[in-house]
Length: 299
Image (cartoon, rainbow, N blue to C red; front, side, top):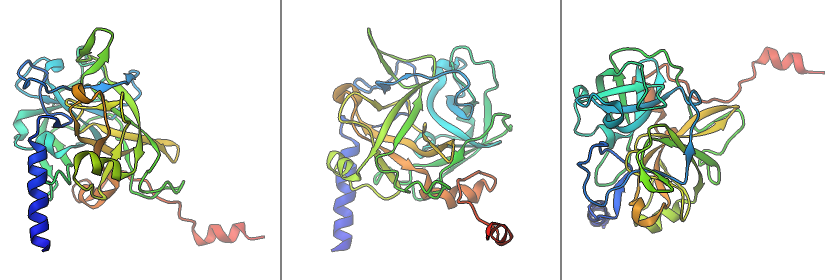
């Protein structure tokens, strides 16, 4: 019975993945070769400020010299030579096909280096049928001087609940934005605030029970991320600092649904995977009171 249920579940997921109204949140270039009806945008968001997100990363198609046209996914710097992104952003791509721009804000005026990729490490459990474990690490050939972002381990000094339910998160990306004249590809980084909602909402929308390693976030209408924003971060303030709590995975086709609840990969579910490759990555942690400090506080 268990085997039959598993096969039926995978068949349902396979059908949903190939429906035209169900799309990854990006891995298409900005060139005009996109399939008809596929859109990419941070919907209902605002333009970020230069310098606010120094660890923000744009993934670029190495064969395209124009950085604006080359950007197709996003990520974050988590150590000098390591970038965290979505597995579907690198699936089927070799290191030589990708370059990385770290600390980038304006795609048209970026003067920093486009760093070559040394290696790609997709999560071994990533599946294009179950859509789970959508996370990957990119090793850079050249270390970046930009500061890395702290990652949420599931614990914190503030005792933030690990599920993040009802907490407002900020998503970042260069996907399509909505303006007075319609949708357009922005030159500058944009952001949108999205609340974490109960997983049952996404379960009902996608008919795929979310795993504990996934986050359902967003609104019924008007605000969302879509193609072009994949791999980009979900961040929130924890312990007084901006912390990476998730990354953009997949959602509904935004030009049809005008924004809807989306599915994101949960950072805290992949602490061991990240540490295996990046032992120096910085995670949130609880304060540990040393015994001699406790003695000093006794009356």
